[in-house]
Length: 126
Image 1 (cartoon, one colour):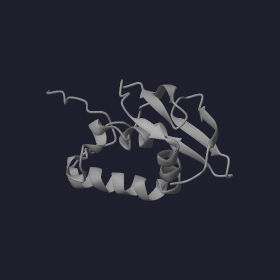
Image 2: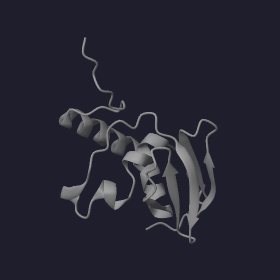
Image 3: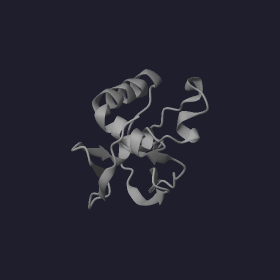
């Protein structure tokens, strides 16, 4: 658990990233895609590690809006209508600190499961 407190949360103009500046001097820019696929929601994380879901096809996801939740978290609503993840300050700073490792683990999971970052598009028959 960290005692860092966010000073600023700023969504980029293209809505594809969130920059978080903490009062301990740490600043992270997290992509909307990473935030979406690592959402702390039960829908993504499940209720146990075995139930965790690998979320494909979110390369183009955007942050639609954010809502404060008490003084400990923010709810991020994505343009794919996912809105059940409550991102605590501790979770966000952990995500920032471990961004590269988590991203690589996600890419490895996609590859292992034959999934893609690209949205699913039905194949056209000729």
